View 1 (cartoon, each protein chain N blue to C red):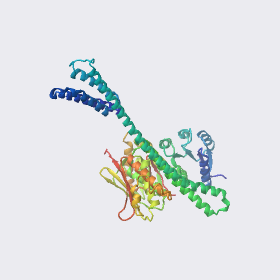
View 2 (cartoon, helix red, strand yellow):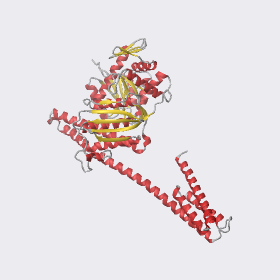
View 3 (cartoon, one colour):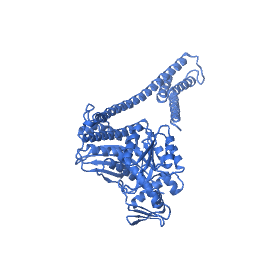
View 4 (cartoon, each protein chain N blue to C red):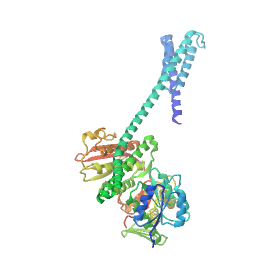
Length: 354
Length: 235
């Protein structure tokens, strides 16, 4: 049964409950307390509650009609007969219908406003991300454009060394742009809805192997100490995205953990969770930077001096979003001695024994 | 005298053709270009290249069309260029007979390594005789098809029947990426929902028996989410 039908069923049950209760309540009021004048109020309250707790106008109005009929039939003169000629009945009927319509209108409006608010929050976040990214894209593009046009216009006047240096710079900035684009693609993938995740059963060992191969290609001189469990472990995840999280953590360590001597990738299993940790023994982070580690902002917004630092922020917020979409959690903390640990956990997939 | 390998590049982006051509020619390969599948097929049949580089992102084109056509009659190796988000096309291309893939954007070193590897291994395949009753030798790894045994560094590695079949299959297609479904079909005959897991468990056991560690696999490489391949980086 889809969500819509479920909702309608619940609404019907709720309305019936409330109406039954008010009918019984009215009987009590009439027979036990002898306060017949309260009865219309009881039903007005009932109608108000139904409008409040159900979706749309239909249930409210239906309840109003039922209540009007009930009151007319069972609780007013002539008893156990329908008679609408008496003015009081007509007026209370009208009052109930007005109450229900207005309440339904209010609740519908409220719900709509909440949806709009959530949408605008999302839009704001996306706009912020785009702004930060566009800003960051300009730096490498400046040097790529500048370096290449400098070389073309002044080719013969520059030394070979200068040529090589500028070309190296172009390559470096391009690699940075590639990484940035990968992060953006991941964000758009998980932003639309979480169902966009392309989940597969991934063998943990194969995931680590793939990441290490990619890393070694980019940073052949950086050794990584790896530790993972002996057993056969599967995780249900989007391979490309999880690989990206690990690459982001590892690359961050290489680029920003100044003075790092040892880089470790530790994976362990705790109950039904697989924990991934990237540990370095570099310079660590200041308390200030640690505050909003995964929020997408690192350092103050005005701090445009080091756009590479801004990029850590974006990279980390993408990691957080990816892991969150997988139902896991990220963390980043200073090591007790020196350096930082970045990590996340994912749920382990059960392996059925054949 | 022209005795260089001929490589056909099917790509429509001018800038990409330019640098790929420059890269390959400066490494002593002869390069032919085509900017569409139709042109590619024509050039292929008139020049018989030794290797084809096929971009999966050609507009309006179906890379699979090209593969289906040439695989009707030729075993010429094909490397496909694919971008992220084209995973399905990539797997389909491999199932249709592509040998390897390179992900865009790619650097020159990585690209060149793949080209060299495919050309070298393709040659080896024909030289060593992958027919039953032969031996497969690559570095420390030896597979004796006659007695169905595998040796690493002189030591025999005891494999189950399935494990051996997988290794034999990978060696027969040395250098080529075999998709999960291709391996499953060849080893088990048919696929069912649990097949991929079965394959993954078997591969994990094989790796353990051969003492291969993540990041240091010497012969069996996993292409995450796609399949497996046997190749070696050593010259």
